Image (cartoon, rainbow over all chains, first blue to last red; front, top):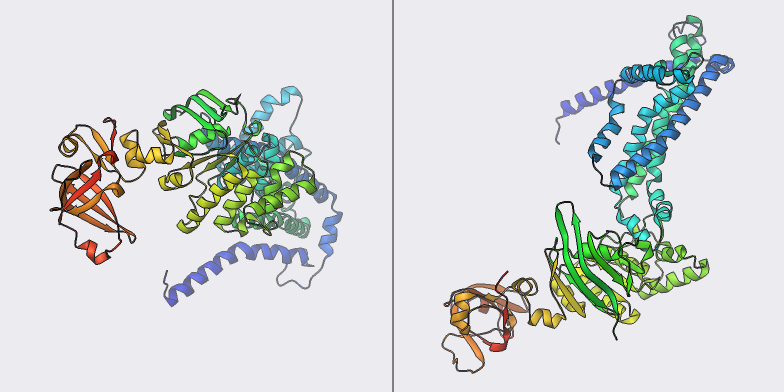
Length: 271
Length: 345
């Protein structure tokens, strides 16, 4: 497409502004975490790692980080198993209602978190409480898994659709029984999609707050919940900034890795 | 007594509403190069997939070397397949691909590598073992697929249009090589193709498929010279049929007859026609197609109908043959080259 010079400049400015709106506030959080002044005066009088040490010693933040890791890993594990099984069913088998199943599987990611949260909260209340199981880490994991499954499912299904079924047939034709064909041929071919899906699912779970609010029991506090509770306390402001930076870092790494994996596999998938 | 490598009885396969294979009976002999020929959608590939075990028949029976395998899984049949898209495992090297069937059979590592190299040498790919399939050309991948399917020495090799993706030169070269390879290893080959020339070139026998049924089984010469139905006559070779009134006026008999274009001699209209045993028909040249080595003449007969005649360009050039258009000619062929085929299509 040909663009005039003024149009090019205008588009570049718009794009720059867009990125600035997204990333300048994040940068501000990083600076604030190093700002020696507790009330985050601007410009910062200097730089310090004092708040990082304080945050490290803050037992509330540390245990919240720990809870978030556990919730993320749990939800990711469930998503990997269920999402992969569902993807194989939809991509490799013909059955009645396949399109419906595919739609119903993807729907949770589009549902407003607040709806999912309320629905799960009342469902847990009516089903689990009579059994003596209250809200806790387990319910958070289940709540997160509802949308993590979608991520894994989407990744694996896309990969399977790009992988001809003749690979599996060839393996069986050459003497491999079904499980062997899966282990030798299918699994290596979908592995990058599993990794990418798992990493994204973890990242999604790690910073989730809406569903978490409705499914976490009284003693369970994830990192986002901890931030939400502490950000209104002026005394804690610098520590909140530190925790926020940690959260950003821990979310960026899996997303970056997942994107690298997806592009690598796209380049070598066709043979 | 000759044993059957493959025996199909009353084979049927339906996918929902559509019937892909509609009652196929077939015997393929041991050591034979057998082609299944037909247009796309004629059921030939489905029959191949049924023999391999990728599909389960709706009805009927499949025997391999006398053993009923109708309900067996692909890995329980002594059959290997060369796929249309080759299906080489992209995450393995060429050598690992070829050695894979041996690995499954727990052949010791050293032996399976040696045999994989041998199989690669058989298809003239020595030295390519360490490469990945993605680093090979289409023709090379095709050979790797062959080596992988042959390394375990199955009783039966199935080939699903394996030459379809290659360009013409390479395809002709591979036709010759495939046939030589089959003679060398002595394994029964079942070859699926929609290319009649390919089938005629390589096969010991051919089955012509149409709408899920077999129209005719025979040697290339039988299929070509004695087509059993109008469909076979038109699908294998150029369609050249004399029907009804035209047949009565030219041949003196009603019916549907097939005449191969290269059997027809093109003479001047005034030429002497008193040759006993020969049949004549006069007409006007409607179209001239210059093909380099030959020329195709489409002639509208006075008796009705249109025949195609093929002429060698022995003395004639492109300019000469172009002048034929619109001229009157006399077509002549030996009576035995007009083959009666059933009227119904």
